[in-house]
Image (cartoon, rainbow, N blue to C red; front, side, top):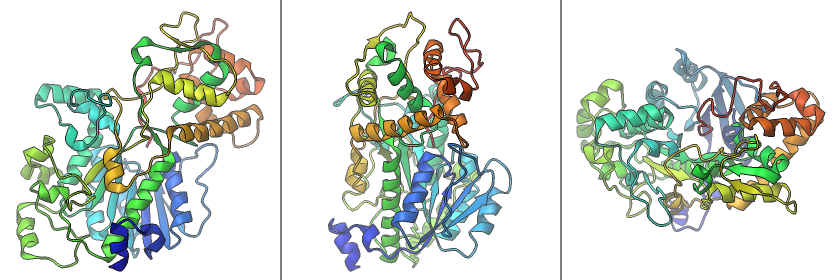
Length: 482
């Protein structure tokens, strides 16, 4: 209790004081965000074991890198029957502290997991996306320029036709928001959803930033941006910041679990019956009465019988997490850098880091020279998002954008040099993904700068500068990398 009091007044870091012991289950975890989180758990939480459940994908030319006895691997495919049994069997006998989910993309992924979460009495941390705002009615632009702040700022359109149209157009964000709805309808589960913008950082495998780096390095005399997006403001999330927030949330949950809190949650204040197992081991008559009117685990049938209250579903004002006694749990947070430069400013920043003193020329307008445009960001239409709520409620301290770009460019400079000196274990998949995003003539210039690049690439370039590959940067809309 003394430690909790000291933490609540801001005097002690919970990760430095809480004797956490237990298991953290990471779902997905192969890609760059997940790898960062697993490594941070091993480095910063020495009494926590980690179980990683994924399909065992090779990434950046390497399998999952951890050789620690504290890491256990479970192999399974979430889109196939039996995945929940793999988890139940693999976690049997473990004290599960938290579940970090990088691979929940559809409601069918969350339903089988809910009974396990209830049994484990663990906190659930879901990686969501700012794409949820693309299926919502965003409020009119205001200072600092149309920035979306919290989930209570938005609501789905009241018109069913428009709502369905937006969902079909933005299925990724629409499905993530449906999953958040399901979590809201499970009143006894502690959870937090981290809505990420376009994620960048070392080991980014989307191909977007590597293509941006190559464009800025080899085509710097004619960096084209279309007028349509040049003034668009870009929100980005640093992969290492995601890991920091997740570790802080796990530490806070462990602290609260050891010293139960009586703080009301936003859902409770909004009228949802509550029986929060993470706040108290004892049950009251109120919680037993509420369990008769609302199921403790959301199912498709339960959501039909007990839909979310209209004011919660439609985005009516809710208690602000972390303020006025409201709990930080059962809420969504934007995790991103504070700065939101225009795409033109973003490209200038990257080009300046790649070669600080070299001349660069960013041209806004249609490219007539065959080099195309470097329009890789943003991947959403909603505009930039604000991290103000995460800073207030979670004490989130985002890394400055300049530092993020320096560290990310340094990684891709290293990877580009690695591709120029062929050796075993090259990241060919990631390299070719970036190559497919480059405009045709830009790709030809990059490949022509070093014979090893052309040997590594599976995409060839015709004599007229056209790509012989059927893939292109416009063949599929970019999504956030989870």
